[in-house]
Image 1 (cartoon, chains in turn purple, blue):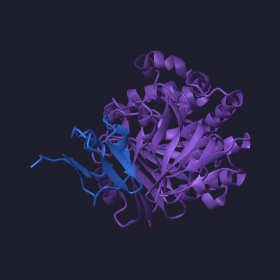
Image 2 (tube, chains in turn red, brown; image 1 turned 135 degrees about the horizontal axis):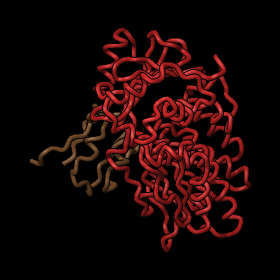
Image 3 (cartoon, helix red, strand yellow; image 1 turned 120 degrees about the horizontal axis):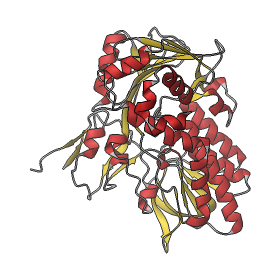
Image 4 (tube, helix red, strand yellow; image 1 turned 180 degrees about the horizontal axis):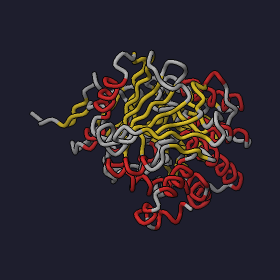
Length: 391
Length: 58
């Protein structure tokens, strides 16, 4: 690690890896600092991503694909099962990744492109001069060094502290954090190409529980929002897979709030989970992290080239991601989430019963919602202005 | 004061994101609690494992 870079990236997840890789590809010097001793571990995620979303960034590699998905199912609170399939039967709609290897691959690519990487290295304070972020103090094995940078990209995840130290309020409202637990289980009988989502106040109040296939015999599961997510998951596992063997225990938090009001400051850009750019309906954030990481570095390169890294200049990044398909989807799905979590089980049953099988042209939450509204015209009235934005 | 049950904590950082004081920090596998913690208990409410508890100071 040197004492000065064009871009210093805090955090070695998908956002940080894409930011550093993009920065060096644009001719800048960049360094990723990761506080953990290993990239990719411990996993904090269910690891699902849509097919097209992944292809936008990297070609799938069997080394970090746990399973290919061809369909999904939703189980209503009363146990009724709705199957979702692609219009093209049997075609791939998404992947379940193995994040330990996936994250490592992304950072590897950044390193190969020329970025420096430092693990077990924690940003413990920003270097600020006249209110401008100029780098960070980096702690490594008890030693603190100053690393200066033209732009610092905060990609420090859900437990992000860096932006807060720079004076930006990143606090997630308590009701908008999805408190989750996931077990990776072996020796259970599941459909190895389908994800299944369970809804209802008994299984996961204000959230959902899922089964993600992770290869022939393993599955990840996660309980959504609610006090002590672990209790809900344990109850489900005891009932559904009493003989399953848990081989990994993964707690985690996912923000389902709106993104930060502003994701830049003088000399600072905030990306991925740290910027709260998670899809509030699904909790998915891998694509959004890679998207914002890449875009931040592109804008940083432009601004550094022009010699202006002020908040005003960096705002281009904030404006662009908000106007993107991703930014719009977050805003729309936030409203859908707010509507859905307020519905009683009876209403969810009614909605799910109205469609027993859906063949989706495009496998996305938007197409799903559109289809559900089509067969439940009454919902248009309940959703009000939101319904209009879905057409 | 806030008590961290370290045998239960899974160091996921869920609590850090909701702390209004910025008093919590996840340092690799260790959740640190700074002096500015007000024992408001928001973190205890969101912990997926039940590892945090506000206890009376005695």
